[in-house]
Amino acid sequence: MTCFISHTSIDCHNAYELSAWWRDLLGYRDLPDDPNEPGHEECMIEHPETGHRVLFLEVPEAKQVKNRIHFDLCPQSGTRDEEIERVLALGATQVADLRGIHGPGSGWVVLADPEGNEFCILRSEAELAQPSAG
Image 1 (cartoon, rainbow, N blue to C red):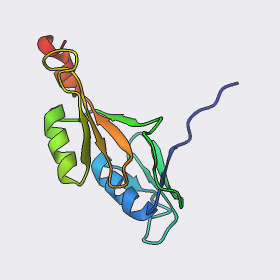
Image 2 (cartoon, rainbow, N blue to C red):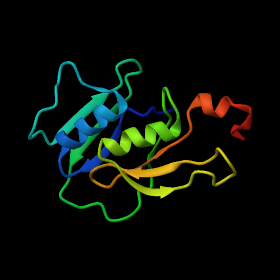
Image 3 (spheres, one colour):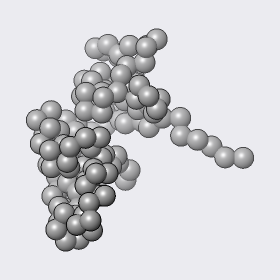
Image 4 (cartoon, rainbow, N blue to C red):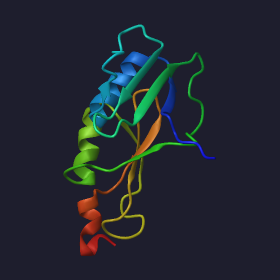
């Protein structure tokens, strides 16, 4: 017997605002039969094709330390650096720049969402397929 991951949960102070931010970032949608609204303490979004779901839960505690689990995101189109610029324009903040950590063209950038939850932007599959992508 095994389990499967039903959804990923993220603790936050404002479930509606953070779910809307991530929905726009990832191209996800509200559940068709349960739309998110201001004041909801639990807000779920899902990928329209894969069905992957992320649940945002309001909690009273503030984030205090580095996440022990986080998302690693790859651009669906364009480059890592173009995606980083897009995400920063949406309101993310840069935590660490690890581009080039393993030589030219390698690495990632650690960002944080508006409530401080870290995630990484990696190189796109197209960038990884380039011979010099090492």
